[in-house]
Length: 323
Image (cartoon, rainbow, N blue to C red; front, top):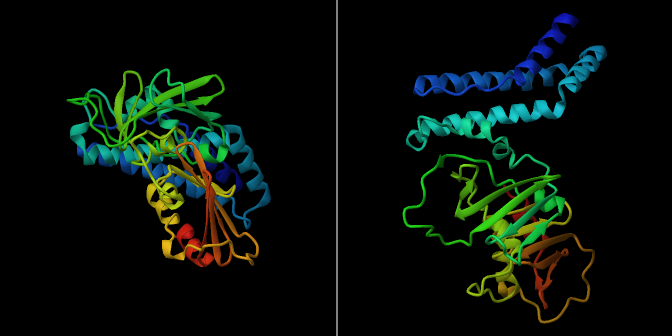
């Protein structure tokens, strides 16, 4: 393969990445055809550039490839490929649930008209502001980059523009999230478990079922919710942060990490702890609860409570690193 031909291919791939994604057809055959087309483009874009960057290739070629990618913006190329991957998922959803898509509009139309809806998971937000209703004097603002990055629960799936027939009948607290970047502020509302109300005009989107946990983590606790003891509060937390590595809003993973048998409770602090190996922070309705792990013990503390447990670190490590 000649040097000029390689550079031509890379340039073509990047140019294709910038092409606007056209609206899918309304028939199944057209949808399948569009999915295959997008999958081929994404595969070609990703694989060819990765192949040409291998160390065994000519250094001059790699340098020029990098300069071409820089010219078209590496970040933009990555975002474009991700948008195309999301478009594939949207088209698959349209095939699976055709009745939820109105003939006059589609998910691709909505995201094309209001691009921020498609960027909720990708944007590097400065802050996320949380409230339960307009004018909520107890609203909270998150500015911790680790907690913000973990809030990737808003990949929009099938939508419905109709209102709830009898209002919201849900088992969760509804929260409004305001995503801010510079002077731009975008508002969405979690109205039901895994249901988001967003956009103008407002529509309902299916999102991650854990989306309401961001509010549970940081907003004050409703009076009717009661959890007794540190373990119960940790298991009911909306968020968990592992040191300064990462955070998560995932009920199953949080409950798993907080599972400590009560029979392991110690009456006194151990005398020979050794070094602290792991530190977890649980966010329970505005309270920070801490779990510090040692080789043979676990220390729970926060909200004026403290407990020590006899528990090998291997048990907690298995839970944190599983899956």
